[in-house]
Length: 450
Image (cartoon, rainbow, N blue to C red; front, side, top):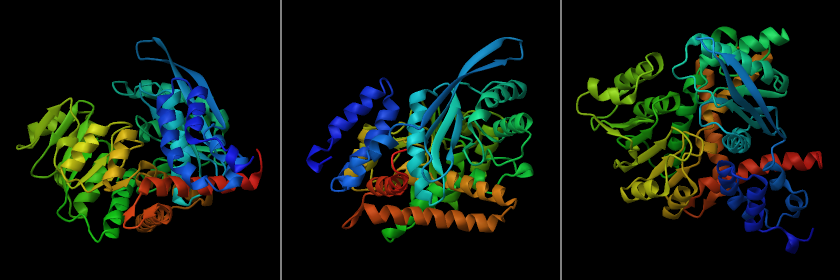
């Protein structure tokens, strides 16, 4: 193929839309990456000839299956499960399992596509995958969740393995769900292998896995600020979400001298002008995880705070924003509000929480903006370290893991700088996309057409 015959960007995106009708989340993820990759590969014939980007944007396989289970009243319930195995050029497929009513094939394909680049950025040998079901564990008894997880794994076990595909947790899938699924895998296969990460410490889990995504996002933010000669001391920080990622991001911000102003859930957000300190964060952790409470109840315990029903926190003036809830929670108008209010840095703790318009607003304003594939890679990085510990039948100390996480996030930042620096400005989106793509693409070239 001659360079003059290369497919241009609009034609490529039209092809993606045509092949994936109705899958808006997946098309959005591919478009966001392709915008940067097309510039990079313009004069690199081998990537065009071997259709590398086209191949990465087509999952190796999408497995869809029925999950039947019985609720506590004896009713037979039917859900749909998926596992999307996007690319294993640099290692076994790796990516979480999500249980939530919003789970669709499109959402999982976008997550698996993003995961491919995120995992490549860590420097660890992990490919990209994602899975889940349109099952809502909220309001279900432990026995109902157990029965669902066992039924889910009864099909999934055929498609995963320590050297094939190693799932982890995600939204709706925590230690309880991982335990039930691991137990069923062990029961079916009669093997004790590192087929899942995020396991309990009693049966092969890793220290700091719970904290890793939130801590990692703040470590990446710390590196961005350091590049500008700044730090978090005294800076006002707005955070969305109140689950595992958000609370641990808040914890690390407080440890580094920042002032956390907000947390949220699906019903709205709380604003605490006095700052959400460690004592308050601990209250939220207990309230949300053990008591299954709502964030609105925070204002009944801590005077001076306000709850804003049905709203997101992006209108609160701040220096730094950390979207840590879910995809497309920060829209173009929210991004313009943050910029107008003087926000200087945004680090994504969730997967693709900023929509495409919002990303363009941040890039045009030239503020520090870290995409999720870079900033929230801490979780999967420690999952990769858990895989290493399982393979070696060893367990590393917390201090060792904390240092490894710091080193990995610093390494990701350095890779983003390599391809994203534009004079005094660093385009972290472009840097992350190109660095992740190049590693996967070069491995694919080495294999030929497979």
